Every structure is written in structure tokens, then in C-alpha cells.
Amino acid sequence: MVEGGEPEGTLTFPPADKNVAAPAGTCLHIPPGTPHTLANGTDTPVKALELFVPGSPMGSVEAVGEIFAAGGPPDRVRLMAAFAQHASEIVG
Image (cartoon, rainbow, N blue to C red; front, top):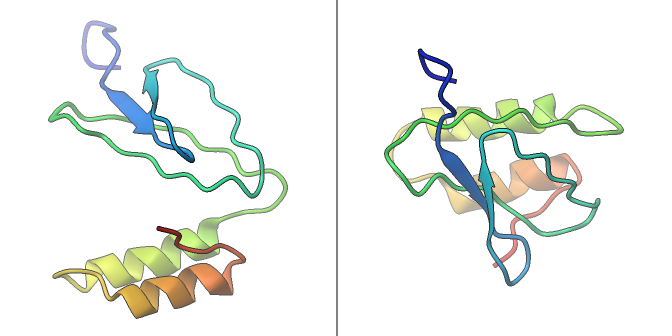
């Protein structure tokens, strides 16, 4: 929330073949194995709280973060390897 208590932004979750708008306060359940991503298509900052049960995705978050921190376009081969190392994959 921004100063004054107003909600911030809307994320878009495009699982499979449809887009789901998720404004502030939205709760979504994405079943395991469901291909998905999230996007902020606006200039408004968005905050998201993601829960991964069971397990912790921190290893994959850190691995992907290192690739993006290198600057420039991310190396797709390295990204695919990082996701595979954590039982995930890039599709599409």
C-alpha cells in the first residue's frame, strides 16, 4: 500500500491461455505443475507475496537473480539450467 492506504498496482498472471488480473488484495491458487508467470504491465509499483508449499523456492530465486544481475539480456541457456536445477522449467 502506498501512503494514505491506497492499494498499489495490478499484476497479471497469464497461466496457460488466459490472463488473470490480480489487483492489490487478490489471492490466487496456482496448482503445482501449472505453467504460469506474472507481469506488471504498468508503471505503478506492485508488491506480491508468494507462498510455495511444500518447499522453498529461494534457491531458484537466487540462481535466477544472479543471472539477471549480470546485466544485459539474460542468457537463456543459463536460465533454463537454473530452473531445471530446481525442478522447474521455462516453457513457450
